[in-house]
Figure 1: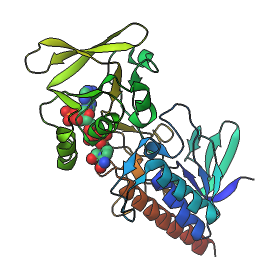
Figure 2: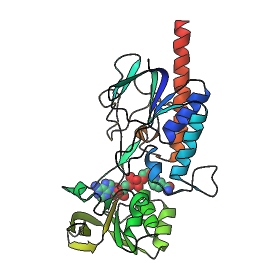
Figure 3: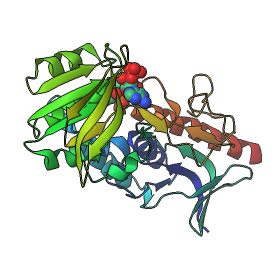
Figure 4: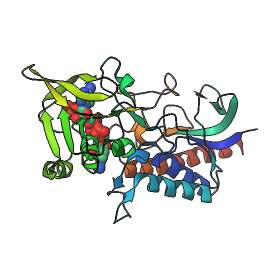
Length: 317
Ligand code: NAP
């Protein structure tokens, strides 16, 4: 019958923490963890593409993103979470129980926790995806190795861009950060680290207007945002790190989204506008977007779902 008390959609730190709490509460959760459809789209979410996580409490010597996800997953399974290694294709919140489809397979649940995360943004250049596997990447951890001894560029001015740039210095000969403004958005500590790294070069106040190359990328065309002056930059790798878009395709038109597309949760809870449906992690967090805040919101989502499920029992009792 595929009928569940709670289904969790998404397997980053939010979804896996929600699963740990739900399993320990005896809610026998089903977790749809997704499946790899691209190198940078692994089950486990963005942490699967992250090297060292130095700020997750409890790991003084740091932990890698994949190790953290693997530990959370093992913990969720240990308490009885049923994990399905597939991607939800449709969610219907118009009827109860709610339904989640995976192709032709239908799963039903009294409550749902949406933890589908966010995906990396891409530069708005026509045909840019044609350069995928030809020098274009959104994941230094995945692809940095291929640029050993080469010159690469990283686009973006946030923490992700500098984290990618620092990681790439382990492989590439030079890493040039190209950012459209002269001020970086990244935290001070990341700026200090990047500025101290002699392999990192800067092209600030410059926008990427085009990509040069035949079989593979050989360089970038840039334009100064102030003066409009054009220039070129030799680079065999282009790593794009310009933020993320929340993965809300499955609930668009059913749940309220904010202007940037994040699911709106109400007050001091993870509740959405539909009773019994909760959201946690990056899909509903435009502000903090940390592994620890995602995990915390996953815990909150399950506690909210548990209270909701108890209220159903007391109504029918
Ligand atoms: P972000 O902070 O939103 O930065 C995105 C960057 O991309 C900004 O510099 C932005 O430029 C630039 N950008 C956006 N659209 C662009 C476009 N079309 N063309 C060129 N540049 C564009 O995103 P993030 O770096 O992915 O970080 C997200 C959150 O995760 C942040 O809160 C960050 O602190 C956190 N994070 C933390 C760590 C860590 O602690 N180790 C690592 C990674 C991320 P503008 O500045 O001009 O807007």
